[in-house]
View 1 (tube, one colour):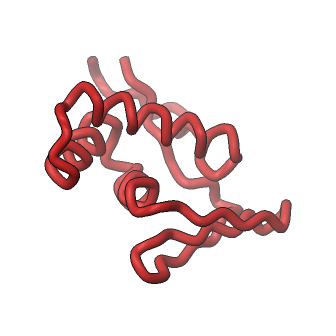
View 2 (cartoon, rainbow, N blue to C red; view 1 turned 90 degrees about the vertical axis):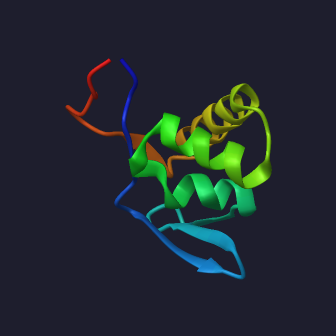
Amino acid sequence: MKEVYEKEPDVSWRSIEGQAVLIHNQRGEIRVLNETGTLVWEHLEEGLDSIARRLAETYEVDPENALRDAEELIADLLQAGAIRVKSGALPPS
């Protein structure tokens, strides 16, 4: 089963010129995502497979590379505290 992710409630964000600007309110940290990271951020709740499909279609890359890129971006956002695993929300396998 794959984990489902959600945006951390303490992170405010806005898209500026196609890039998501994240502000971790408690930490006072700001993070700017590139176009690819912004796509992942904006579609996070759709799940990893959907994000990978979007990346593959948008950037015309093979699905395996798109999935790997999506996993790396999600891991980076998790480590930064911008997202979290959604409690009690594991989709069926």
